[in-house]
Every structure is written in structure tokens, then in C-alpha cells.
Image (cartoon, rainbow over all chains, first blue to last red; front, side, top):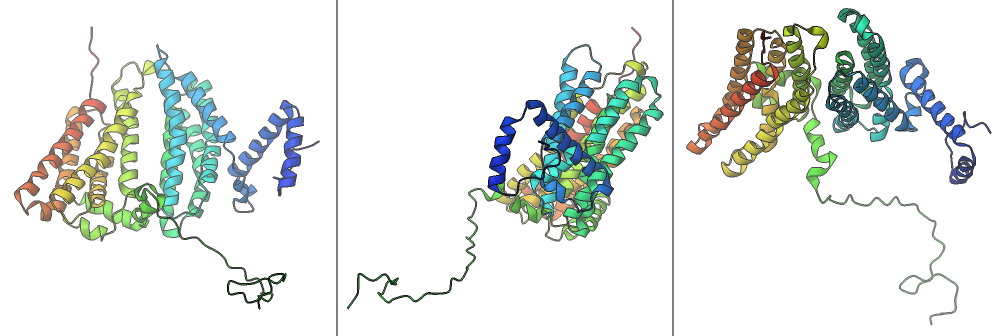
Length: 202
Length: 240
């Protein structure tokens, strides 16, 4: 059975059927299905022209994607962190992990306090998916950073930061009234700046 | 005579009820008052009821610190957006700028060790200065010294008083001792004058109120000393 294009279930009997089918399918099928869903959402979030329905797809939020990107980023940066002891590596891992989740929480809370009517997890989901370009930049710098002069390293860092910020800003700005847009968007900008800075310096 | 064997529906007076059209009434329960009003998002929404133009005006008021216009700027609408994001920006600048300043002085740039402790210390220091200290001072001023200003007015004022440090700390990245002291002293003067000028109406009232000026000055001085001696200390390479 092909589950890749399956829409989310509309009623309880369909959910029950799906649950039985989920239990019967193999682990690899379940994992592939979840990975395809993450890939679909990623494309949706990061490529703006896919968003024809103004972000309705984000109602099917999930935190698997954000968790994977957060872990990959934290592991890339802590692996790259130079140190003679393991404490710096674990420092970096802890800082990145906490920064992403607490940062996403505070940015979302900020949008809600400014009067934005958004589901909390929808927003955290979006911010988490937009961490993906920072992942790309961290991997580029981790592998090629030592061969590149500092100014050349700034180019992918800046481009990926701009990509992350641009993808999430559209959504965040649409949540709040027009005269509060910059107040909702600035924390997003600061959040991705923090993460980009980390991937540059480590 | 009442007919108890009937299948008709009876209301409480024993009258037979005819078939009433069912009217759908939306029952909306009254929102229960929360056990902890200060813990809800709704309580804090009133402190984010500002526009981007207001934030710009308030920052401008704090930079032109000698003019006692801040209360007019705030117009009884203290906000927490400013204190929160100004202090978070300062944390980023301390972390990034402090390390950058050390990097510029470092001779062996290839093996530069980034100090991640700057992050923890910056978070502790800046959030203590922006929130903990003004809350304590605000509570003392309001409940013991009977000030008209509320606790959140003081938090708002302290938060915006830190806005000058955004510019000062960026300039402190320049790794020259005299330059750093000059910028930090200007920042200290600006920030302290701002606080004292705007609280002057309260401070001049009585001797105990005058005492409040002392912790304000002391904490500001302590802050810039921490900035200088922890984040921007200039350690020159010493030949062994």
C-alpha cells in the first residue's frame, strides 16, 4: 500500500483503519513515510512559491523535523568544536540545543503576546524547519572552513542566514497586526543570527 | 386530575409540554478566573500593546538621557518588549563581541579558543540587570516608599536604559584599553543619568527616597566593571 501521498485522516474510523495499517507495516515503511513527510514540509516551508494556500499545510505540524535538524546542527558544531577536553564539545552541544528550543519558544511567545493568533506548536514547527539552511551552512563550514579565508566563509553563512530568515519572516509577519510586524520579526532575525554566528565561529 | 400514566412530557407544574422547536443555544461558559493570573499569557499581553514607532520613540528618549521625557513617552503604557529584546541583543553582542575582541588581539589566530562561558555569564548578568534588580527596586519603591510608579514602569525604564549599551558594546570590540574605558564610561553616564533624571520627581520627595539613588548608581557601575573585566579584558600575550 502506498502511504506516501496519503492525506491526514478526516474522521475517527479512517484513523482506526490507518492505525491498524500502521501497526502492520514494516519499520522501514514507517520511517520512509515519516521522512517523506518531513521532506515535503521542508520543501513547502523553504521554497516560498510552494505556499499557495497561505500556510495551511503548517496546520499539520510535527516536531520530528525540527528535532532532527536541531540534533544534526548541534552534533555538527560540537564535533567541529576544537578542544583539548570534552567539556567544550558538550558546552557547544548544550548551547545549540537549548538555544534552538528555548529560542523558538520565546519567539513564538513574543508573537502571541503581540496579539498574534497562532497555534504555539505550528510556529515552533516552522521555526524548526527553517533551521535547515543553517544546517547546510554549518556542514559547509565544518568540511571546507579550514581551507577558506574568513571573508569567503562569510558568503555561505550570510546566504543561508538570509534564506532562513526570509522563509520564516513571511509567516511570522502575517500573524500580527501591520503596525507590530517589525516587533514580531526582529526576534526571528536575532534567533537565526545567533545560530549563524555559532556555525561561523566553531 | 393528573394523568400519571400519560406518555406526554410534563413540565414542573404538571402542564403538558407541546413539541417545542429545538432552539440551539450556544452555551459559552464564563472564563474561570485563573488561580495564578500573573502566570497567564493574557496578563502580559497588555505589556506588548505597542507599535514599532513607540519602541523607536522610547529608545530615542533613553539615548537623549538628560531630558526627563520618558514617562511622557511611555504614557502609562509600560512595555516589556523593549526590555526583553534589548537585553537579548546585548547578550548576543557580549558573546560575539567579547570573543571577537579577544580574537583581534590573539597572535595565534589559527588556534583561537572560543570562550563559551561568556554566554552563561552574559545571560545571568544582563537578565539580572534588566529584570531582577528593577523588580526588587520597583517593589521597594511601590510598597515601602509609596511611589506612584508601578513595578513594571521601573522594569520598562531599566530595560530602555540599557539600550545605550548596544552601541557602546559594539564600539568596545576595538581592542584598545583607553577607547574601551571611554565608551563604557559614556554608556554608564548616559544610563545612570537617564534613570536618575526620570526618577527625580520621586527621589527628591524624602530622605529614604533619596537612598534609592545609591543602589541605582552602584548597580550600573558594577555592570560596566563586569563588562570591562570579564568580557573585554585585554590580555596581552606575554613572552615566557
